[in-house]
Length: 87
Image 1 (tube, rainbow, N blue to C red):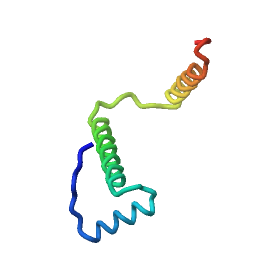
Image 2: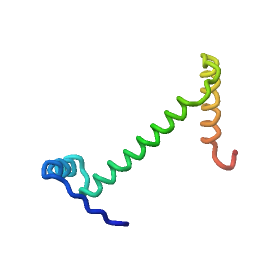
Image 3: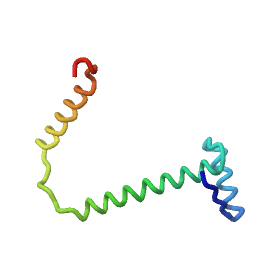
């Protein structure tokens, strides 16, 4: 694992220290890693949302679409629940 040193003003360092103690992080590094992971997830979600917004529209969905979707999910759940000897 690489090391990175960051300089923070006293107010931000106090905030980080408080978050570490109050939220159960072992170290400030764990807290910062979690922030970075969440930011990466946020950026990925934003990219997916933008890609979806830029994509061509599809046919409108209605009740029958959702009924079919529920059926597919139920069938997939049933087949996943079967023991390997029955599959």
